[in-house]
Image (cartoon, rainbow, N blue to C red; front, side, top):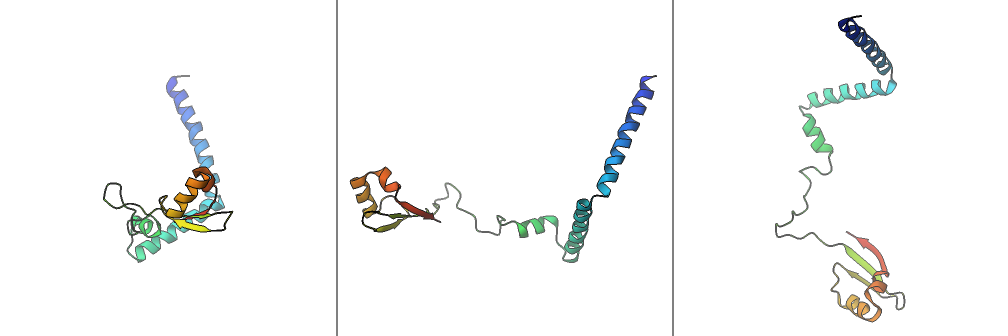
Length: 125
């Protein structure tokens, strides 16, 4: 056989294989549901004159409409997390957003940093 005929037969086999895969996909209920969703979504977008980007921006919780965190170097620092410590010996609770809190410093001087850090009850935003 010539290489041209061989190439033709090979392509014919590939085409048959692809056609079989396509037929299987067309009978897949998941694909049917996705195509139905896509059709309905496109119809809705057309009805409300919205683009795909409009929909993405609307549904994306990190969209540009949401308040952005301060970018580094713009002079505004990110708010520190609230840390809540409880002294197991006295039951005293300290809530602080920085490590420079008076009682917390005293505890660290008395008991050591590692010990006091083990008293961390929870952290909040």
